[in-house]
Length: 185
Ligand SMILES: CC(C)(COP(=O)(O)OP(=O)(O)OC[C@H]1O[C@@H](n2cnc3c(N)ncnc32)[C@H](O)[C@@H]1OP(=O)(O)O)[C@@H](O)C(=O)NCCC(=O)NCCS
Image (cartoon, rainbow, N blue to C red):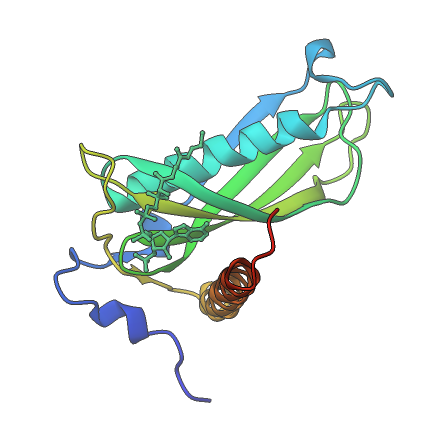
């Protein structure tokens, strides 16, 4: 099979490449009564905060400095999380561009009242941009996927990147066309 995992590794002026494992992180948290919604299960926004926190830690580690959330997409909730559950939020850099990184996050829950293995309860993909002291994008080290799973995730991230860019471009073009035709929002 053709190796699709090197194009961004040659971005001119990029810092030295880093392997995926150098920044992979797990953030663990026990859910409490203050995390619940009206149904008594954990509020999705609480999980999203943990996802953003874990992904931000990974992006900061990988890029060696501040990184801001540019987008969060495909946040999926597979199972409810309950008070007392021990939640593990696992994050890694899936892909790097010039100044942006896609971070993949998997959310696992250990049920407080069951001795079963942790269940996957959610996942998300976030794009972070590394920024300098003025908040301007700065180059990031290319990520080097190590395992076959890392390589698959890198390739899937490239597909998502292509779709994000195409969608943004298409919407921008539509808005410009409507404005040129005199439509007002
Ligand atoms: C993200 C941000 C730094 C981008 O700045 P910008 O001037 O638009 O810079 P660029 O267009 O060069 O984008 C920088 C990189 O981010 C990517 N990017 C920007 N917006 C994006 C979006 N909405 N989705 C995915 N990627 C995005 C670009 O593709 C580019 O990637 P590349 O360098 O790897 O090719 C800027 O929009 C920002 O500061 N946003 C606020 C972030 C923040 O405060 N987050 C916390 C919310 S409270």
